[in-house]
Length: 280
Image (cartoon, rainbow, N blue to C red; front, side, top):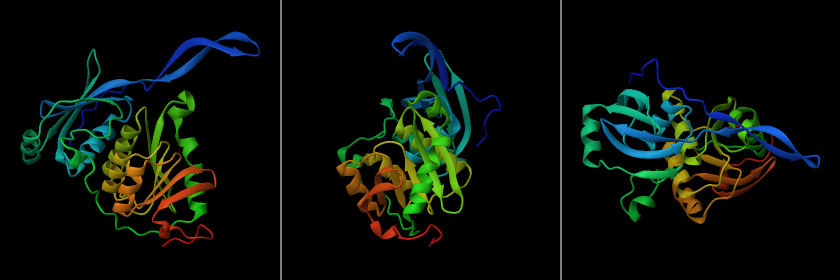
């Protein structure tokens, strides 16, 4: 895949003036707001989806989205990637290798999704709840590891620290710490960006924890299963269908995780009591 050296780099934040009520009176203030932009994902000249997303880490987003949608099997399947800014948003223009281009043309469609749409290109109810990929990785994690992983998030959430309005998805691994983290106004987009970043660096996700700052919905579990992550740790609760999907995929689902406390919803056998140096 070739990426032009002048690929678009838009600011992810915008500082705006306002008023703040403090100490019993109004003060002039400024607030950093996350930039939200329409981002089109175009393959061989045909628009597949239009998402509302943060204009940061766009290469990761293009690759992660393409992997999650099954449009590509590896980053190298994209022969060229360009980012073009227009008056209404950003167009991520990708050219696939001839075999995948022909496959994609057969299912080509146009759709516009809300912020962080997680079920793009779905044509039937069966597709929406199809069985996830089975996760076979069997590492073990201690409560101390989970607490350490959660504690690593705030310092890496640079955009959220300024806006308090961004989701994050991170991958943490015993012995390595926080390997990668991506942020976006949409939780699905953040996970797609993380998947793209890991794929670009040829980093697998089969030994560690997927960290989510959002609730866990079914499509988030489907994306996690595609990554092969053995465990999800989320700060909010899962939906009932997400739990069913995690169980079917063999994923350890840990949620309502705050500090040293958390709840385990599936596959508790991957948890070990004791100190954090017990790594399978």
